[in-house]
Image 1 (cartoon, rainbow, N blue to C red):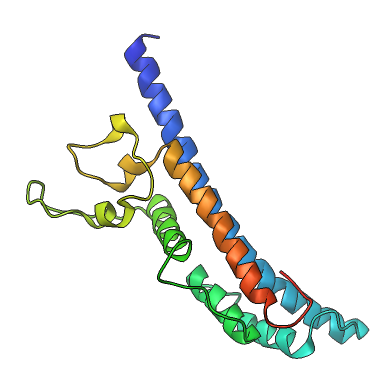
Image 2 (cartoon, rainbow, N blue to C red; image 1 turned 60 degrees about the vertical axis):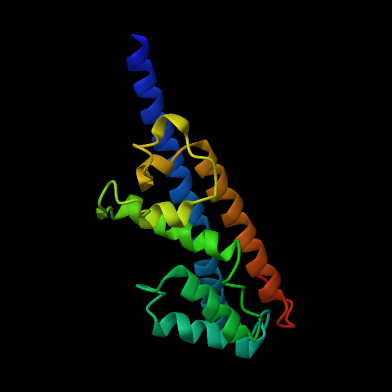
Length: 190
């Protein structure tokens, strides 16, 4: 294998690993909120069968009713589910105006771009940044060999810095959620 073929293979592998890290970081965040609602639903079912009251009754019932009414959250943005859980618990909402909320919002956009790729068009040479350039600007260092004529498209952003950013902000977001959710005065945690 010559050097250019090895470089191309490395680039394809790095791209695949980075895209997988973004997808899995988003899956981790989404699975966290789904587990809160699923556990509440399981607790309510368990309580009905055994009389166990390990979750505060009213909170568990509110979470279970919401989960049932939304068909397990189907079609709802995961961030909407986080807000709903906090509201139902009477806990403080996460600050949407800063990181990690904004980063996780962007993480889900990237995940959706990977999973449901829809082209975005812009006119090259106008000096107007693309939506992706604006959204990703300053979040992490772009891989140098992947810049595309100075224009940022989602595919150009994937690399080790993007993977690190995705995992770091997913973990920070879940941590902030767990802290806020615990402020509702109950001893049950997700």
